[in-house]
Image 1: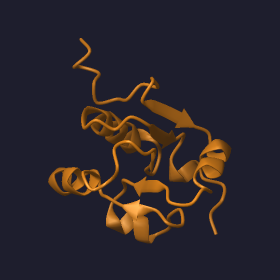
Image 2: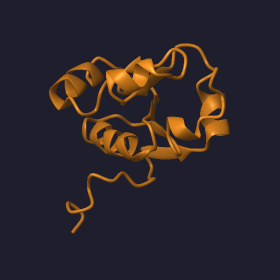
Image 3: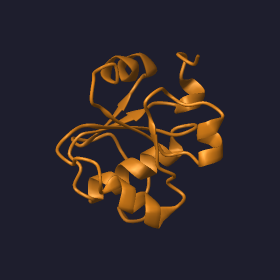
Image 4: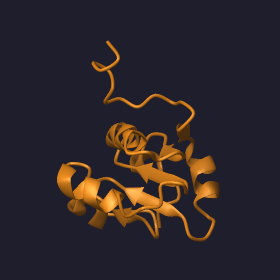
Length: 114
Protein backbone atom coordinates (compact mmCIF):
# COMPACT_ATOMS: atom_id res chain seq x y z
CA UNK A 1 0.00 0.00 0.00
CA UNK A 2 2.82 2.46 0.73
CA UNK A 3 3.88 2.50 -2.94
CA UNK A 4 0.33 3.52 -3.83
CA UNK A 5 0.74 6.68 -1.78
CA UNK A 6 4.49 7.08 -2.23
CA UNK A 7 4.30 10.09 -4.55
CA UNK A 8 2.73 12.25 -1.86
CA UNK A 9 5.43 13.18 0.63
CA UNK A 10 4.52 12.96 4.27
CA UNK A 11 6.16 15.09 6.93
CA UNK A 12 8.86 12.88 8.41
CA UNK A 13 12.46 13.00 9.61
CA UNK A 14 13.81 14.13 6.22
CA UNK A 15 10.89 16.22 4.98
CA UNK A 16 9.45 19.12 6.95
CA UNK A 17 6.57 21.30 5.80
CA UNK A 18 7.03 24.90 6.91
CA UNK A 19 4.53 27.74 7.17
CA UNK A 20 5.42 30.80 5.07
CA UNK A 21 6.85 32.72 8.04
CA UNK A 22 9.12 29.81 9.07
CA UNK A 23 10.16 29.24 5.45
CA UNK A 24 10.95 32.94 4.98
CA UNK A 25 13.10 32.99 8.11
CA UNK A 26 14.94 29.80 7.08
CA UNK A 27 15.78 31.07 3.58
CA UNK A 28 17.07 34.41 4.85
CA UNK A 29 20.45 32.76 5.48
CA UNK A 30 23.26 32.96 2.93
CA UNK A 31 24.19 30.06 0.67
CA UNK A 32 20.87 28.24 0.76
CA UNK A 33 19.59 25.71 -1.75
CA UNK A 34 16.19 27.14 -2.70
CA UNK A 35 14.43 25.33 -5.54
CA UNK A 36 11.27 26.40 -7.37
CA UNK A 37 9.92 23.22 -8.99
CA UNK A 38 7.35 25.01 -11.19
CA UNK A 39 7.53 25.39 -14.95
CA UNK A 40 9.71 28.09 -16.49
CA UNK A 41 6.55 30.03 -17.46
CA UNK A 42 5.26 29.98 -13.86
CA UNK A 43 8.71 30.94 -12.56
CA UNK A 44 8.89 33.97 -14.88
CA UNK A 45 5.51 35.17 -13.60
CA UNK A 46 7.00 35.59 -10.12
CA UNK A 47 9.33 33.71 -7.81
CA UNK A 48 11.09 33.92 -4.48
CA UNK A 49 14.35 35.83 -4.85
CA UNK A 50 17.47 33.66 -5.32
CA UNK A 51 15.41 30.56 -6.17
CA UNK A 52 16.76 28.12 -8.71
CA UNK A 53 14.11 26.95 -11.20
CA UNK A 54 14.17 23.19 -11.73
CA UNK A 55 10.94 22.08 -13.42
CA UNK A 56 9.60 18.93 -11.74
CA UNK A 57 7.61 17.99 -14.86
CA UNK A 58 10.85 17.55 -16.85
CA UNK A 59 11.91 14.48 -14.87
CA UNK A 60 15.20 13.69 -16.62
CA UNK A 61 16.43 17.27 -16.41
CA UNK A 62 15.05 17.58 -12.87
CA UNK A 63 17.04 14.56 -11.69
CA UNK A 64 20.18 15.78 -13.46
CA UNK A 65 20.01 19.30 -11.99
CA UNK A 66 19.02 18.17 -8.49
CA UNK A 67 22.05 15.87 -8.47
CA UNK A 68 24.20 19.03 -8.64
CA UNK A 69 22.89 20.12 -5.22
CA UNK A 70 24.67 19.20 -1.97
CA UNK A 71 22.80 16.28 -0.40
CA UNK A 72 24.11 16.95 3.11
CA UNK A 73 22.87 20.57 3.08
CA UNK A 74 19.22 21.62 3.56
CA UNK A 75 17.09 22.03 0.44
CA UNK A 76 14.07 24.35 0.41
CA UNK A 77 11.34 23.58 -2.13
CA UNK A 78 8.20 25.25 -3.34
CA UNK A 79 5.76 25.08 -6.24
CA UNK A 80 2.47 26.80 -7.00
CA UNK A 81 0.22 25.16 -4.38
CA UNK A 82 2.34 22.62 -2.51
CA UNK A 83 1.46 19.47 -4.45
CA UNK A 84 4.40 19.30 -6.86
CA UNK A 85 6.89 20.29 -4.18
CA UNK A 86 5.63 17.42 -2.00
CA UNK A 87 6.23 15.04 -4.91
CA UNK A 88 9.65 16.63 -5.49
CA UNK A 89 10.47 16.26 -1.77
CA UNK A 90 9.71 12.53 -1.96
CA UNK A 91 11.97 12.26 -5.02
CA UNK A 92 14.80 14.12 -3.24
CA UNK A 93 14.43 11.85 -0.25
CA UNK A 94 14.75 8.80 -2.54
CA UNK A 95 17.90 10.42 -3.99
CA UNK A 96 19.50 10.63 -0.55
CA UNK A 97 18.80 14.21 0.55
CA UNK A 98 18.59 14.41 4.34
CA UNK A 99 17.02 17.82 5.08
CA UNK A 100 14.13 18.85 2.84
CA UNK A 101 11.88 21.78 3.65
CA UNK A 102 8.66 22.36 1.73
CA UNK A 103 6.68 25.63 1.67
CA UNK A 104 3.17 24.94 2.94
CA UNK A 105 0.61 26.06 0.36
CA UNK A 106 3.29 26.89 -2.22
CA UNK A 107 3.89 30.24 -3.91
CA UNK A 108 0.14 30.98 -3.90
CA UNK A 109 0.44 31.15 -0.10
CA UNK A 110 3.64 33.28 -0.15
CA UNK A 111 2.82 36.68 1.43
CA UNK A 112 6.25 38.22 0.75
CA UNK A 113 5.86 38.85 -3.00
CA UNK A 114 7.42 42.05 -4.32
